[in-house]
Image (cartoon, rainbow, N blue to C red):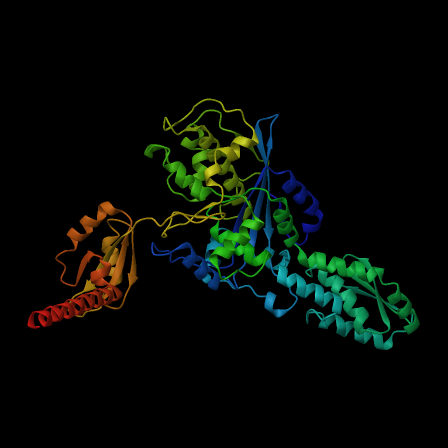
Length: 530
């Protein structure tokens, strides 16, 4: 699988764009520098979770991004795939954009899966979001000093300049670890900061410097077409991988990911602009960038409801789903499964390598889309007949999954990017209250209750909290199991009885009713007396 770094990005760029343009759909996967949010809860609405993520991702980055372009060939009735793995780092230009925050858990996770940090840091591809683009263009036009990393070169040049005669030349080797754009910037910086020097490109890692007269310098500066070209090259190099993302936005191809919500948030933040505070606005914005998105995590959750228990995959993780369709029962569930051709050797590759994961995601999407296209809703079974293969069945079978994004362990089952989210999933709320003024042992309580069903806890104070239970059939069992506990009580939550505001409303209602009755009674008494 092609690994794309700053060293081979330019030479592969045209082929990458050509593959994306020809694709029937494009799948993607991201690896992050930090694990942002893990404390998902049944109490979370999509807006709650989005805002929590938004506040935590400012300094985390997508450091590896995989793209797989799947193209359908009608003559062979098969899909062909080309995958790429991109290593990404922010440009070393000015302090606000040159930081990457990592956390230990994420580093350990990436190391476990053999992530190459040297390749990332030495050869990562630059990128900019829209705000940074404006700043960089301004810096290049104004001739601002970009970085402090040229001091060693300035020292060599100054020492040579003092004794050099007009016409003398200095061959300046450039550290090959420098990005191409940094070499171009050095050309501009030398010409600006040394009044009697001019630079020429000699070889890829060498700059030729000549001492000239002031009149020669003025003539060279007048003919500034070369400097315009250099500035364009600088900006193009710094823009880097953002050119690919801009192309994806322009192409409007269907995008496929596995559990893609976090990927969409990070991609938008990193390549397009600041994350809006409004969850609704984020959905609108990301839908403009990628109008058609499919989430294979959502698709596989839905497909589970169509197949028997013996036919399902072990887990909803990508590796389990891929093994199911590549080597397991998924290969035999329906006839004439579409063929996916990829000429890369994945034998020694591991999951959580972004290019491989993007390929596996697209592979599973094709298999599931075909099964959905065979589903007979009336008969509640798959029509085991050959469907004429074309790219149309791919999206016809998954029509109702378009722009539906998996929402794990939350108030609703999914996020819908181009419409309102579905209603909340009904929950049963239980209230847990401590006895004898003793603090609740929340960990101990959850350890016991989660033996029976999945629950989430929301603390109200040290002495009471709410339990959210999604499986209604388990509520009676929980109440029965914990009815005689000495440390705490568990009851079905009632807003009017257990909520502070509910009690206030009831008290006000009772007081109002009592006042009305009293006034009416007094009127009756006065009438009788008169």
